Length: 362
Image (tube, rainbow, N blue to C red):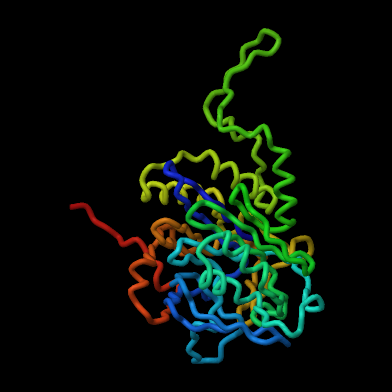
């Protein structure tokens, strides 16, 4: 359902690419959370956690429950799916259905963060992966049911990157939290992240070097064209195969010297994970289940996952680039410009995504 990866340029500056796939379109918004924005998280049955944003943040957001008709949504109503703060820390939410329930293991007397607010809490409080690891190790987090998802308990795990290139995976598996350093900077979906790293050991042969000539039994062989280096890459859109391909592309893509060129390189990389409608379909009698969202009707035709939007994050310049399924062009939000404002703002992504105008020749 989602693929995220970290790309390092020739100067070792970090960029994050990410796609989000679902079988339905959702009313995503893009929001700006200023410094000192007051926020609160209320887990069911526990004391609330309150904080103010130390770091301004720009993010893709969604409400956790269906808003009432005409209701204006504020900073506490919109939950972060993908974002970056002014310290250069990024946060991504990605599907992971094996989270389980952890309420029985929590201490009733401790203030507890609801997992639905994890993105705003992390981006609002921390500047580095090391700070996230230290802070969350001492913060109780509850896997609450989410009304917008029909009562599912936050079926996600989370990817965090900082401007130094450090990466972290936050994962609940059957109610147990792990904070795992991510040496390859890639995250997809289930199985557990540790399983993906183990599976990567099966691909020691991967290389970007073409072997276009060989000799067998005295007979000379020659490929008619280049590109054979990718022959060992797994081909499906499963989480397992996408993880391997993302590691390959992030590792071997040419390292750029200029930031704009690096962003363009990440855009090229992410095109390899863009999924058009209909490429894979899931008939009800033989396909997999699909995330259902309250207030949004499932398509009447056979479900197909498709790339709803793609993001690129420049962690050094604190820029978030986005494109939705309506087009191939990215728009850019410069957090350092936005951070001059002290007002929370949110706007539908579809309004921000501009179409390429029709042009004429001079």
